[in-house]
Image 1 (cartoon, rainbow, N blue to C red):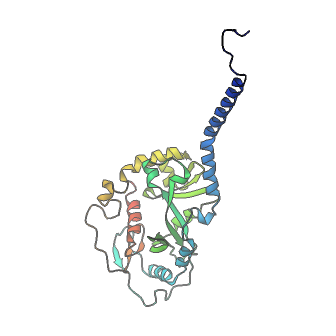
Image 2 (cartoon, one colour; image 1 turned 180 degrees about the vertical axis):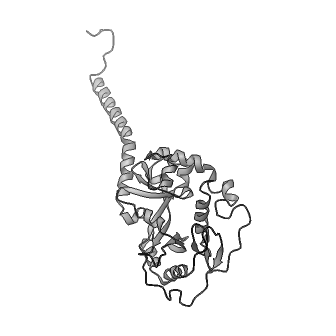
Image 3 (cartoon, helix red, strand yellow; image 1 turned 60 degrees about the horizontal axis):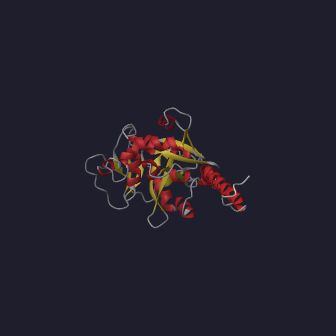
Length: 301
């Protein structure tokens, strides 16, 4: 029984309260589903690209045209026609200029370019969330020989050109990068941690190793969450980002702490020795230099 001395609230009050409660529940449900929606959206993004296009490669037709061009073909011929420096040698020598660098070599083709993805600086530094769309970014492209020439394999590296397009960065001995980059499939994005020569695949928000170096990088675990992988990278490299002391001292460029060697005349091809023999072209040699340094110092990074 109602107290006659108390004001009676309108009968709609209970209905209004129920509507407010129902809206609060709906909002909470939407918020609780947000991480799942983000993850599923990222998965759909990864699944929307084909195996050969594991990342959204800009100006892909330009990259295709470049690997099929006479200039790239001749660069590969110069590499294949020059004896490799001895094992363990860090010698850098100029490649002899031949009128027809392909003379005496069997015909060969180059495969379509593949994306080489690496962890993004923001992901390594921990300044972006551990989401697939933030974790990795396209670094460069690789294109390997269709088949070995004699007992030699080689990989062409394409670097992005400022303003759009691609340019030849160099030619390198071996094809392991292209092999791993080619493992990208629907729903899985392949990327590399170049400092340790590790290759991984990203499935939704799970990182799985593809080689022994990657397994060691995950402390032997068969898989980790993207969040845990970000923590590992931050611990390893957060103090080695661009403009850090590690970078400004030249340690990330492949030239050590001393003065950098003088660059040769424009267009002069160089054959660099070491564990990754490479034909570097002036103006793009830094791409190869960084990769060679990362692999030589993988135990110190």
